[in-house]
Image (tube, rainbow, N blue to C red; front, top):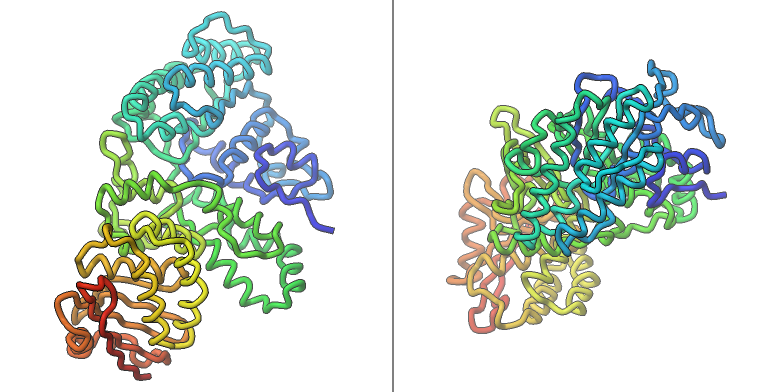
Length: 527
């Protein structure tokens, strides 16, 4: 009998009462609510369990201890055995995810009024004023006085009105100013507040939405809470072994190989300088529910169109997304007047932290896993190269086999077919254009592909590694294939990989200006 997996469920009480699996995060939550500070902010990508975290916090502050004990055959959760008073506080939880907001401030007023009215009815509070800011202030004060305990405010998807209008500057600015005043209530009514928690995808800078909330403690990059959302490798193996064992048995596969593939395909999100990574909850649960099918569940649940356009607008080198370096301060740069793609790519989950240089206080970003690497590259190919879908499908079938077999001739033939399908009018007559196009193809297919690889003797155009082979590509738009191959040899580009046990290929490629495609090519191989 299959266990109940809480796919898409955001109601903590329903998960516990109806016997759904729950990965216990309450020890980490207890650490948060009993530590120093009382007003917090957390940014995480979509579908990472932020709403479930908000629901769990609500249940804790409402004193619903029965939900945290033994229930439906599941053991008691960690917080049940930790020191906590279980006092009942008035809890005000607002969720801004429902509105479209492109209609402007009227939609914002409607959503906030609806949310405040619902919470007031639950707390049996009468709101006399029609102004939503005054209603918010009144709800905090009246609920606190009525219950004799300070209020708790939880705001989920606080940034949806702003992120949803980021490509409409005039509407965005008006909404931002309205929310600035609304959220400012939290500082003005601090004496009535026990705990405040705001969460969303993005962090708007202190000079805009948070200028009146500079007392908020930002947990986004805090190593202590890097796993408060998402599921670690250890938690996966502790909580989902029945699903894992069933998949292994049904498909007749090796357990170690399956676990490694699972990790490479779905794990890899890192949210602090601490080298701890997590799975996206949504994608992992869908994988288990679908009997182990490796599909891009998280990626297909949203659209990166705005980010793809932003990357193109800012002329970011898409062949170097895997090695993007930014400073700590860059994570805080997010305003419609000064949008930078790098922090948004991180905050939305398309890139993640791969390394942290403590001495320079710099983060290196990379794709979190194969799901995002392959899917995002496919989206970039559609935007940059406009190649027909049937040609992309041909690549998916033919090119992986050719690379994995060490078949250079077939690899070149498939790449030629793909480049020939790109519309004439978007091709740029630069060496970098072709290098980028081929880089995106290899990356879309999930290969370990790097471009502009810097080594002691020079810079490799494109390097692709498989389990058995290393491919070193050098492109020449104003030169011959022989010139390209001679450069690889003279610079000893493959010296670092000698002795790796892999077969090494040196491939020199001439770009034919007239045909706008791969012209002559030469290859040398040695082990």
